[in-house]
Length: 150
Image 1 (cartoon, rainbow, N blue to C red):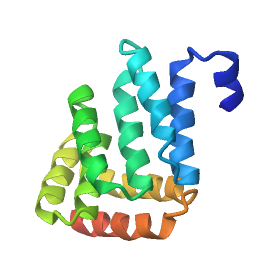
Image 2: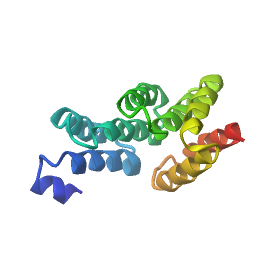
Image 3: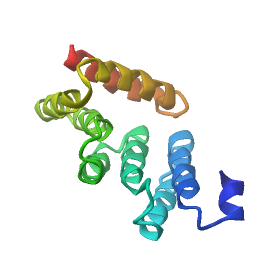
Image 4: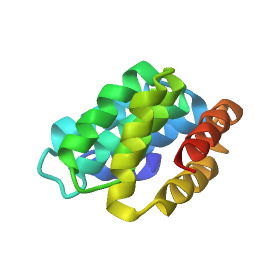
């Protein structure tokens, strides 16, 4: 991704994914600058709506729940028919200690895809967070999220 961005600095999606990976693998908030640059440069890109979700999960992988909540809310506004930002919001709210709101966000997500979507989401996020220096802490909150949906 670094090479792709070097070759084409205007490739907004490569820039956003690179930023996300920097946050995920290195616990480095500077990766958010890449995501935000992609968002500001390409507001009409087909993946623009997803970049707020990338930003939200980047915060989650770095255990920054307070910043993840508004990023998730922005992702929900950009992609209102997509379950993932709602489950990311539930993860952020659980991490911040707001169990009631997390439960509500989980229920909203499950309206789109059914109750099994939470287990699928947790499984996917555990795979991604395995690359994070905070994998254990991510897994703890994700386990809580899974129990909440049962």
